[in-house]
Image 1 (tube, rainbow, N blue to C red):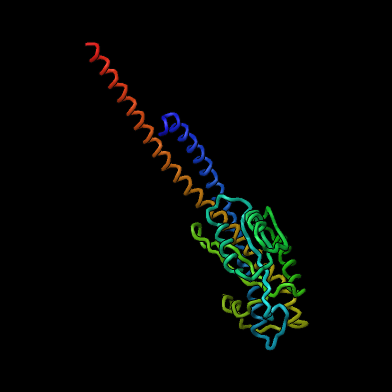
Image 2: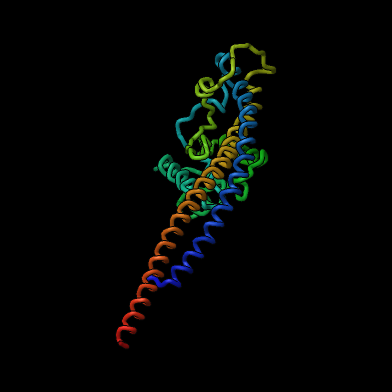
Length: 285
């Protein structure tokens, strides 16, 4: 059984840990607000790209484009977005679990974002074609462009037949959802369904809708990837904030338990000393 000194040392250690988790909670809360603001601005930009694509495809008959054509071989490329740092609950493990389930028996190729994904897939038999480290908390459009260029090149060269991104969508501070978004071939029906804006106005595209698509689809792919990166960055801070809040609360409970245990032992020691003094006094009579 632990001594009073050991309990006191343990309590001091837990209090120190509690201060760290509380500080991390505050830092994550600050970062979360910034990424949430950025996410709201991004969604306006992406809605416009989605609207344009829906309009082109919806109002152009017999359109034929390599980026829209579904292939049968299904050699898959996954863009997997995790964090560079831990202490964010089940954020990374949920992503990895989702990928392993979706890619079961498919021998996929991977583009991984974050040290956590890099560390995990280094131990597994997955072909990693590109790694991006140090961008998970503050992704930039250049990062999305680099990933998109790699994915588009593999798709154009017929090295892969489908490109998808697996990321964590931010719903709220306590609710993040792992999602899979197909980038190539473009899911036209899904875009039309999800496009919230009116696409009934007819447009003329020069020199041709196919040429316009050749320009806009790479921007669309870049936009999807950037959105996934920003959603993931926001989700990471939300998950870390929640995890640190829970850790701080649990540390408080543990401190209360240790304090109670210390006081009981102290009371027992005092009672024992009094009993010994009384016994000694009785013996001297």
